[in-house]
Amino acid sequence: MERPWTIDDPVRAYRTVRQRTEALAQPLGPEDQVVQSMPDASPTKWHRAHTTWFFEEFLLRPAGGLTPVDPAYRYLFNSYYEAVGPRQAR
Image (cartoon, rainbow, N blue to C red; front, side, top):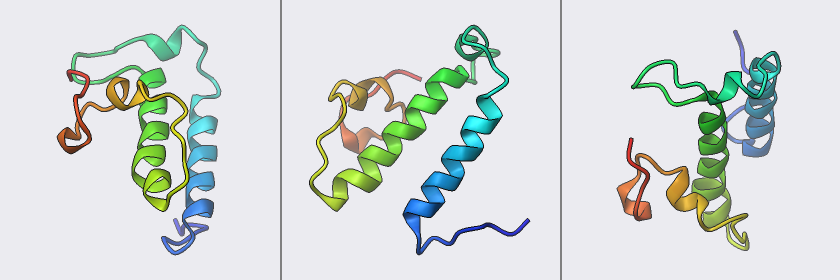
């Protein structure tokens, strides 16, 4: 399947990916998104927040001028990136 965007257009890429994420999550109710189906898989709700934080942290902030939505997100939604600072246990 051909992508409707290129890496040269990060805003369009983000919007396309975000729309797809929302479409995949649309049939899920609130209770469905908080279930951890297995120890190695975080709940859908957490993944949605993590990817949003990732975009803010690694794409928007380096571009300059962005004030984080909530500084606590840096800890709450960072489970991998030690260079960012303290992180949530996996």
